[in-house]
Image 1 (cartoon, rainbow, N blue to C red):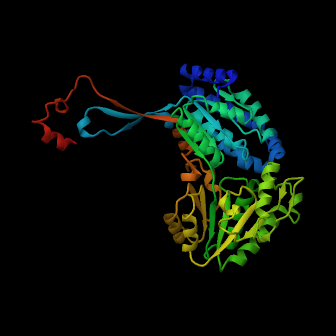
Image 2 (cartoon, rainbow, N blue to C red):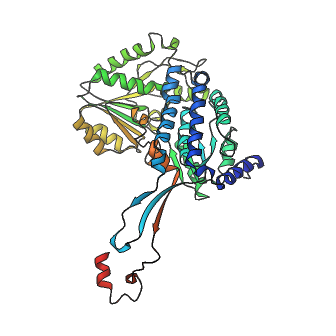
Image 3 (cartoon, helix red, strand yellow):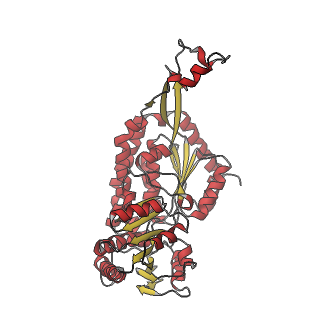
Length: 459
């Protein structure tokens, strides 16, 4: 497929601008990040309004999960940029004396960021911040599904960046397809695994490195040693954040038989505390993004053999689905084969910790794993499983720490970002050995016959 002339010209202008070397200047990078921070603060109200229009998010949730997280990422990158960009001296082995080794972090060039609809501000701008801090030019392609947030993104980026530094592409999926025909120095994709495979295949045509932030079915285990009140609050909060439309939301729950009834009763109470007796009237409970997504979730609940323990109410006119607990669905059902991405939580019961561990290890590696219980067993769970990230006695919160690299493994993604990890992801880590001109050991040159013994000792 040929690239539209206008898009090709814009991308070529970015390559030309990068070649000038301006983005390599640390002061240039910091100034760009400061402008973005100021614009986000100035437009906080409009951002909240846009997120409410797209997802019915409250202003508080919008700040905590979107604007605030981007501001924290900007703060972290500005604070540590000088140190992260400084050449690192490394030790050299004796046989290289007196040469010196250094590691340089240099920008990769022009990068493409493909962002999703569920956290349309945060998941567009957080990787953008890392790419700018590392000194790149960025082509940003957000989802058009969150249309109100796309409008405010367009205004913010126009305020903060020259189009040859950061270019926004706001077309439909055909434009995304065209962009993947272009040559980029890195592609960063957040979204579903199906299109993630397409991105990886298309990137391979240009041998372009990729970061894939995907998703999957993140398990949650509540052991008999857990605090049921704490577990109920943190699971309900993590699951219902953005109405479950979160890639690291608990996707299914294993609860010990001794704690099952207590935990489920506490979860029902917590839902009422958080959102009131009539959750449909709550100003803080989000909605499903689209009619298509709503129909998909309803299809899960209407599937054969589905037993609803709590909730199940829905309203197509508002795309409202109440928090819903489902009792032990068939592991082969669509509900347990696909990432749910909604306020539906399957609940299984176990007697021995090996039961959930065997279940988890028999499935693709998840993006996140959550365990509630004593630390000793928690460490055992971590040792026996693999996931992109994990929390002990919590959910979701690991994503909020800039010092913790975020990403998946296997089907849940590849690569890491946030904080230092973002800077490294968007940097070419260049190894340099500087050797003196006046000192040249003859040992490395042939013939080696009379020197091999000494060379073995040095090596």
